[in-house]
Image (cartoon, rainbow, N blue to C red; front, top):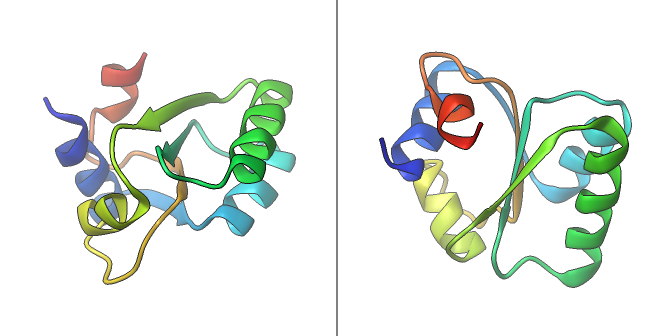
Length: 98
């Protein structure tokens, strides 16, 4: 299964938090099962995501594409630098990443 499809199914059927600020807040609280970060995310955001995900023991996946492409995969008309999958819904994205 490809990653894009897994992300889209998770966004459509599961519980996903979009956006860097909200994602980092969720990470600080230890919420989420998987963090996806776009290749072109700002360095400070990447550092925060890496740091807090390590503390919370949450897997980070670096998406091989831009935030605009990631937003498009999520079905959103805006760029998405970071997203957290709290519940994958009908997607098997966690198994693909595991």
